[in-house]
Length: 180
Image 1 (cartoon, rainbow, N blue to C red):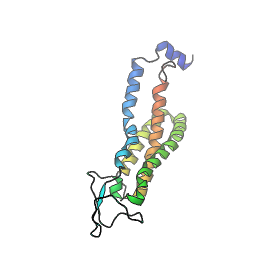
Image 2 (cartoon, rainbow, N blue to C red):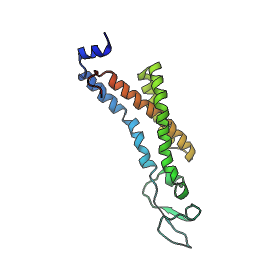
Image 3 (spheres, rainbow, N blue to C red):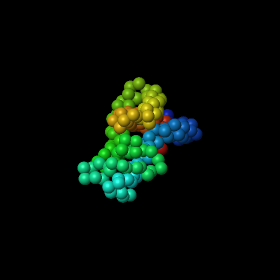
Image 4 (cartoon, rainbow, N blue to C red):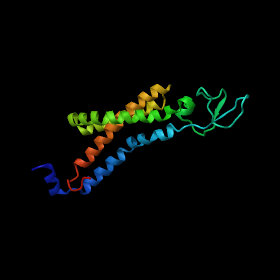
């Protein structure tokens, strides 16, 4: 008897499958939050220029693409932009962090998917959650921007793999007519 036929016989989306599905979705929320964290962490900072030669409150960059010599950040929060002065000519680096993270998810999904098929989904799922937490924690203490990018790439690898494995785990126990 095939597995799908057995699921039709015992129930395609019964109480056990519903509990299992909800538990997996709650457990994967930290991975999903990593997809959105850079919206807040890499928000472009607001700043004012306090040069004595040209006192202005505008956010104007000089002709060479740098910030004025005496700039002050006026944001109430700290971001990677305020931490590493990612304004003017370096403002693209705020968005680059999200792109590097998404490159990690694109890399991690097929790699972790194959590893999950070979070594077991549950084991890889636990590794993905643990490692994304580890690299995410390290990225919050990055001493420089380039190390931050490396850590965010590694977070992306395990987030991509973890979300893929969660999807497979949650749908393999559901009957064929209930799968989306």
